[in-house]
Length: 347
Image 1 (cartoon, helix red, strand yellow):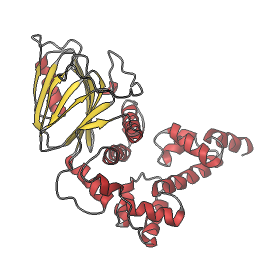
Image 2 (cartoon, helix red, strand yellow):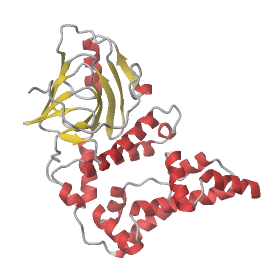
Image 3 (cartoon, rainbow, N blue to C red):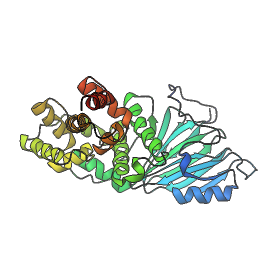
């Protein structure tokens, strides 16, 4: 049975709400409905020098669409050929993820092979030959290029020691698991913010970089690789002074978004050891403690009654107002808008 005939049995994913004309990253459109040469040149400009061919005689890509953007740690793009095609970039020099949104794409990395479909993606490593020998005419993918140095720096910070070779990820990525759903939610958030004309990401490079690194850390915790067992293994708790060091960092600037690896690097221990130490000392995680401190500062400002809920949320590092409202409700038993309304009524 060929890749064109075989469809893996996987669960369906929540829809991405992709319009036939718009795709994703609608504010970042690069080219559409043109000649293959133009499409190839733009695709290679954003990702890798690659041999790109259609598997039909017609080189016109009437329904093709490429939307893409370079960020600090990643490049992310929506790619649709609208025709059967093949892509051969060779060794990528970066880590790369394809998240299929429709159709089927045969994917190879070195000797390994997988068929990517909605619900099953592919993760490629830097030095092995990558090729997509068949991209179905109805296929569209979210393509995510990750800086090699950024991925490896993140893993080193999480482990608390250097790594000596490329991270070897499994090729097939099951997108239907609970960890993968959380990881995809972060990607969706980044795309939503990139499409927001005057949102926080347009104003703050640090928030963009924070979301990018969450995507990298999420991949490291979601997809099997040769360091995952060590990353998830129980570790001896860190000494209490390392907990204090992190608390001091958080309380000196609660509005700053820190990833878990940022906090571990500051403490001088692995992320796992820091989590265990926080659980032993405070009964919570570093991330939850940081969120608690930010929520308390946000509540104090809402009780002052001067600024809007959105302004307060952004000021204290919550870059998704809906999630801020959920965390606030869980912490204080009322919504932030109720707090503000009460403060203004009695102010």
